[in-house]
Image 1 (cartoon, rainbow, N blue to C red):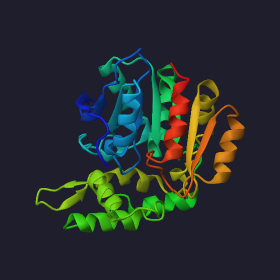
Image 2 (cartoon, rainbow, N blue to C red):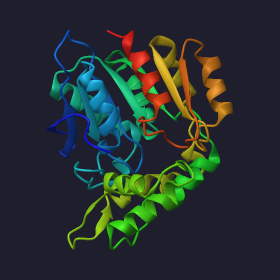
Image 3 (cartoon, one colour):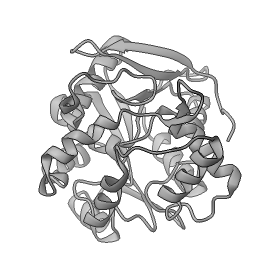
Length: 293
């Protein structure tokens, strides 16, 4: 996948002193429109948005795709117990303040959607609208168990071919249509070159510490009050992978009943979570953004 749009590198400082990183895609010339804040999933980073962020920027909206603390080019935390959505949400608010952004459209994939709900709880007015990518206030236990099984575990990947094979092993069920080139691109988004030249996962293994400390029950907190506050007061779009094991069809239906005005799109043949380069996802996102200021 080629880079769709150039970006500048932005850094800001969290309240506890960590230096955090974001890709800053300038919107094309035209009337000023609300920017988009893109937040990735648990073990991922800002590179996941390289396709859709470029397209949105070309449509005239600035996009800030961030590396959540402990991922990508953001600092690793000294205290692993700060790897939790309330802290991530404060980091996002610090980015908005540093960038001079008062309101934005939030695009959150998986954990990024949970962070969006947390931001809404902390400072509701900054979230003008939200796109939730394969995540809700409730998640299926089988999907959580699958993610918990590999998060933070050491991986031996001496070559990029081995990294691609690992990416296929972990994510193959979600993207059965991917070929070798797709998995190579996937690996290069989720791994970086280590000090000895071999690819290493591009996140701090300690992100799993709070998950292990919380125990099984705390893995699936009740976030319905946060979701209702988000979706009932502002435009919201839910995107679901048709074979997702994290956001079941039943949970998506409950979300629609709780927020009848919520927009909904399903991506055929894809699991958790759509990469947002799929035609159905792109069409839903741009239809949704078209009606926003």
